[in-house]
Each structure stands twice: as C-alpha cells, then as structure tokens.
Image 1 (cartoon, rainbow, N blue to C red):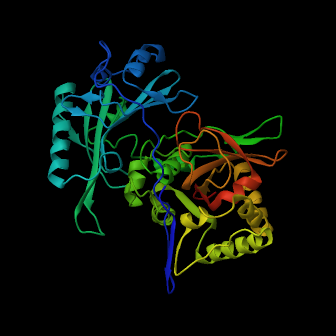
Image 2: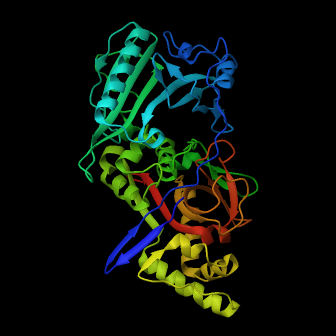
Image 3: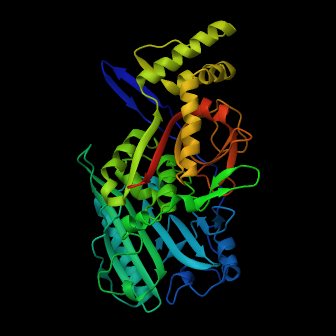
Length: 447
C-alpha cells in the first residue's frame, strides 16, 4: 500500500489505509480451448447438473483458480471470459456439495476497470441486457427493491424454468466532485426456485441479509482442537485480486460468514474506496455504522491509532532507541507514518511496542473473548516490521482477519484476502501486537 498518512493541522486528524502492492498476475490466454466456451455455462438450462469433474476442462482452459483449499469457489480474470458481445472483467463460480451453486460475473467495476462516463456505462448495461435477452430467449422484468442490500442498485431479471439471471448495476453522483461515478455491473446466475420466478422478485443476493445475520450462532462456529488451538470454521475466502481492497474484501468475508450476501464492490462504493489508493479504515467503519439497521451488524473499534497514539508510539520508540544507541525518529507538523516506520529499527520498535503491557494484555484478552464467541476480528497492520514468508505485499498498511488463537504456543491464527494459500496462518502474539495499528469487532446486532 501507499502511505498511511497522519496529517494534523491544529485539531484536524485524518487516517487513511492506502494502496497495497499489487499481487503479480499470470499471463492469461486470449481464447478458450475448443469445447470450453464460457458462454456454454451461462445459456439455459445452466450448469446446475454439471459435477466438479465435468467443470474442470472449463476451469483449466479459462484460467480459473480456487480461492481456498476447500474448493468451494473458483475465480478467473481471463480475457477469454465473454458472454455475447461483452467481455467479463472477473468471474466467480461457487460450488456446493460438488456442484455449481452460483455464477457471479463482474462486467465492470470501478476497482478493476477505472472510471467511465455515464453514457459509456449506460451503453454497456444496454449491450449486456440485449445479449442476455438473446441468450435466454426471454425478456427481462424490472427487479424489485433490493431489501437489505449494502447499496442502492438498479436491476433486471431474466427467468427461465431452470435458471434465474439477475443483472444489477450501480452508479450516481459523486458527492465530493458532483460528477457522475459508475460503480459496478454484475450478473448473478443461480438455479431457479418457485419463489424467485415471481415477477419483480428480489435477487437472492439482495434480500434477507438481516434475517440471515439474526440467525447466526457464533459458538457453533468455534472449533477446539486437541492441542488447545481455538479456531473459527466456515469463513469464506475472498481474493481481492489486483485491487487495493483489503479492507472491503475482509469486511465481505465477515458479512458472508454471518450469512449476508454482500460483496467487496458494494462495500467499496459505500466506503468511497479507490482501487489505487485503497480504503480508509475510518470511512469503512463509519459507513458500516450507518448501515447497522440495513445489514444487521454493528462495529466497534477495540484499538485504533489516532494522533495521540502515534505520538506516544514515537515517544516510546525514541526512548528505546536512545538506550540501544539507535537513531531516533524526527517529526514535523505532518507525520507520514509509513515513512517513519521505514526508518525504525525493527528490534527496537518491537521492544517499544511490547512494553505497552496494558494495551498488549487487552489485545490478547479481546482476541480470546471474540474467538470464543465465534466473532472474527478485523485486524489492521503495518507489514515489513516482522519477517513473513510468501506474501505478495512486503510493506505498508494492510487489513487481515484474526480467526483463532493457540494459548499454549501464544500464537494467533489469521487469514489474508489473497486467495488460495492464505486461508489460515499463524503468528506469535508478540509479533502480532508489534505490527498492529487497529483491531475491530464487527458482530450481529443483539450479540
């Protein structure tokens, strides 16, 4: 990510969690292998009877990759993904019990494709709509109000006896500039059920979020292993891809864990995220607080950096640096935190952080309490201060999920939203506290 900036003039303080270093991308094919045209999975009757084995030729030819070891979701950004006249920017295939449960096609997102003007956006929506009418051989109906969704969207539904196609898009006036801002165009393809064939029915991904969250029972998700490890089960993986969307991708994972169907592009919209600059943690927190009644969750900051905390950390570091005869940190009226952190001696910084025994103790207790209740924690960190292997980002601000703890080894279990291989990792509590810049608890209302 780019710098986490703490700028203060008089009493003004701002905190931004910014751009992540992009994950390297493999070279992708420009055309699918014979017999593996992506559109074959979309046309009626749909892919619902295909087994995972029958899907493998498509997954391989179209460069799908599993997002986790569970193999319940595959993701591709191959340019070979095309439906009708339109190329798809990103596609997810979700499986349940070895068969396809849903396809999610992202034709456009501001995070993936950058800004487009209103005319181009509306023309793309029309072209996609025309393609779907041609493919399904039916005409669309307007979708009903998306009750419980994170953002206001427009939508159309194509209903066949076997398959329900829901096209949703969102765009509107950017309050900061007054200009039109396109957000996303997304197609969700799911098996049809009687309740969803009704004219104007809301899509499965846009209704009943609050009811689903209400039914969540956290303690049922807690697994206690023989070695003493306590971990949460059933947390979905979301691969943020090339976008600097660690905050919104992590938030999506928690919401889906609770049973709500919310995605990172919707969350990026409400938090005013930028694919290059990332997402402000404070903006995400404030946005979620406004959506408490709509989504059925509440959020609490257990620990977060503000200007006083930053100044205290600098003071603590300089005290330890003086003892170790290391260079002290110098500051002016504007503090660039990432620039300062790039100058610290990691050993001295770690020593200074661990002497904050009251905060460190609270950090440990809150992790154990939340995990025991089945609540994962959103964890903002500064990378590069402790050694970590096999990660695509080596410095800067980042957000993770804490999903467990090991009291015998004094370790936490955590997960990154980087896809396969990042589902569950371990770190000592001391190292975890050293890199911490924030800890947030997002939980169902009434918990």
